[in-house]
Image (cartoon, rainbow, N blue to C red; front, side, top):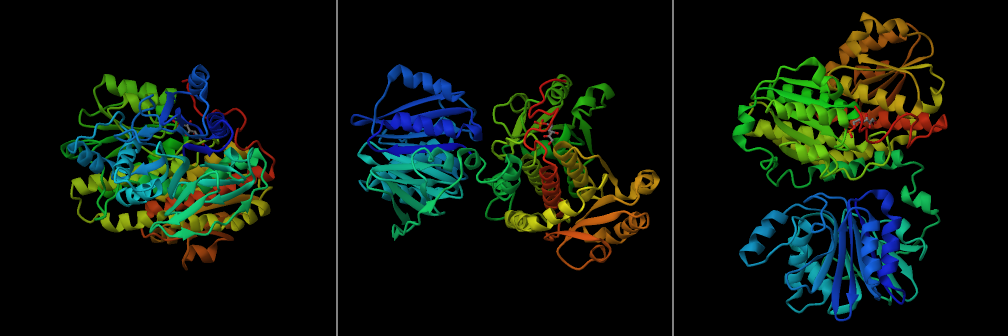
Length: 609
Ligand code: F6R
């Protein structure tokens, strides 16, 4: 999610790497740094804040070097401070390291290294990785071998880049799940986390695969596998322009972010489930707190509010824990009754939403326990809540939230399962659910692969004058999110309600030309849904059902189908069901020629009440 850059060659590497980082600015970051070869040493310049802050440091020192690596950091472990910014040194300042991703076992490693006398300057997992590489390197092996040995001890998702003062013509990179792209150019070695950073230098690239190590020098890169064996390099030619490259080849950030969701799910789970299928969230509150809580109030706005509704569904169903969901903007005016043993959960992508912040301050005044589920590390809500669980979704550029919603629901489900574990709730299949969570990235990918069906539906029903969003159970909450996306990006009027409520009023709107989208991912309630579908069809409406990938009564009734895999858990099925709805809103907006990433009248972070 953060930016990585590296250069070795005849140009001033510091300037090249700084320019590369600028080209990755669109990804979002909160600090930046650079390490460069300085005589026989490695020097590091790093600073919290915008790249211009780092630029000022560089201007003061005017360094010139043949080798440099650079990083723009989006904080995950440790807030956005100068000390936490990358690069980080090992114990002996032999190697300097930058890293994207998360090392899940960094706390265990940190403990063991600390007991051996290692001292750490930062709160980051990256510095721990630097010390692990440094330990291996001090055995006298080449840098690529030290990295190879180190990654055997590190667990997680990463793009790791290392330089050493002992080997001044070499940058070593290792990848597992977080991108590293090598630039192929005569007499120069280049790498970056994303293609735009390479385009001014070369259009010839090679993508580093998972579990591979790249050795980048002026003689061209070498690639090794995890056992140190040489691998072939497969060059690719990039013909995107810079703008297309920033969007990773997608036409809009919204589309890119929808397609990032399998990876976002994986990131949200990282470090939070262990090999025994237990949920690891013990650092949030100690166990007695979870047994004491008698009520949960979830407080959020917009998409985050919709994630909260699914949270309520899970908390009540799995934990029998009374849960209310409030719009932040309304919370204060209802003079809420807050039990002293309750927990207030604030969900926010930006962590800066003024309404949510005001509601949080009210809870703090009333001395209620608060927990944030936040994407932006170090944001106001993250800082002011008693505890925080980060969604780890990476920067979201599109104003319409997609991947942050999925990550929020994932964190809520982890929380519900964790409390079920602590409270030893009978009948909650934590281990089976964790198995399904592990499969969820692939399941989400399978839904995305069927984008063609969504495009067909978008084209066929483009002229519908009203889109109805309906569902029962968990699907009813996801329907609300699907409708919000359609309004936001395609400016289409929508009507949304639980399917069973339709006959109490909204059914009057149904006539020929109305399109009804039914969230129908829970086979247990299909019979009732089929009756609702017939009510719509009898009045001339058309049914698109988002349903599971197996024969059900809904499949025989609906006019169109958008399929999701069946996980066996209603809230996970419903979560997968949001993906076709996001895609539908996106494609309707695209076909109508709307400003997708910056819809009219809306802002990404709403800092006014
Ligand atoms: C919709 C959307 C908004 C936000 C809402 C809360 O796509 O993005 O509804 O969800 O403004 O924002 P955060 O999550 O930043 O508190």
